[in-house]
Amino acid sequence: MILFQIVWKNLLRRKIRSLLTVIGIGVGIGAVVSLVSITNGFVHGWKYLLEGHGIDLTILKSGSDANFIAHLMSHLDESLADELRKVPGVASVQVSLVDMASIEDKPSVMLFGYVPGEEMMNRLKFPSGRSVASDDQDEIVLGTALARALNVKIGDEVEVEREFMTVVGICESSNLLEDGAGILSLERLQKLMNREGKVTAFGAHLEDPAKLEEVKKAIETRFPNLSALSTREAVDENVGTKMAQALSWGVSLIVLLVGAIATMNTMFMSVFERTREIGILRALGWRQSRIISMILQESVLLSFCGGVVGIFLGMGAVRMLNLFRQLRGLIQAEYTTFLFSEAIVLALILGILGGVLPAWRGSRLPPVEALRHE
Image (tube, rainbow, N blue to C red; front, side, top):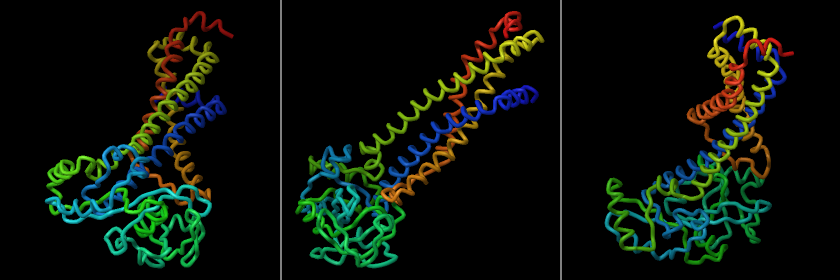
């Protein structure tokens, strides 16, 4: 307890330097928290979107399962749905088209094309308006987040890829991907994007989900150009997901390096300024291990405080991003206990890495030379 009190007083003696170190570490940890939480939100959003459709198997063109762009541009013949329905164990097959398009001043909005009357369209919840009624109408449904960002209401017209469409419904979804997207009838989206008769993926409902692997093998054997993926595989194997996760870890490593250097610089300066003080402690009988413990505790305490500050900075950064009109409602972060624990552990690692060398140097100062230091 006495050693900790000394550590605490040492940090308070240099308030400005300690505060700047905490803020510096906090900014780095905050970047990790915000980026990883947004990545988690995207990954889980994609997963919940598939699960919300009640899909057991997502069937894609081979190769597009691991490439998000290839997945969006995948051209599968819509007629394959009839053949897939004949595979033993398949109860029903739904078709969907996913693409990116400009809506008003937003250059890249995700659009979903569903068949009116099928489950994918019927499961949508409408706090106002209705679903798309038919294939031959210029009608569009907007997610609540997208409608809010565009500041439109039922009956308004929006420009989609230079064509005007009437907003007939605003759907509410707990999934951000859908909440920030536009939904059209499949045929209308096919015409809009010049992809007539083509779809992005098929969603299969199985008679017995326990036979998923058996049905999956049957589909891939019968259709060598297709890949059948479970919901988890469709998310985990997507290269977009992998890239986002890799980016999160990459930023974490950069933060670890920069934070460790900043912490090390602070602790080296602290040891240098307290050379005489450390010499006195050594002359009073303090062991090298006790000197090391004191300096490491100072470093770790600074980093811990930086980690706590970083968690709040990261959460605040996400909230700030959502204040921008172009991004409002289109960013969803998922915070977990594991993420916060990871942030604190990362901060503690910074403290250890940044403090170990200064602590070692401070402990090896000869008492006589240290006492002569001015």
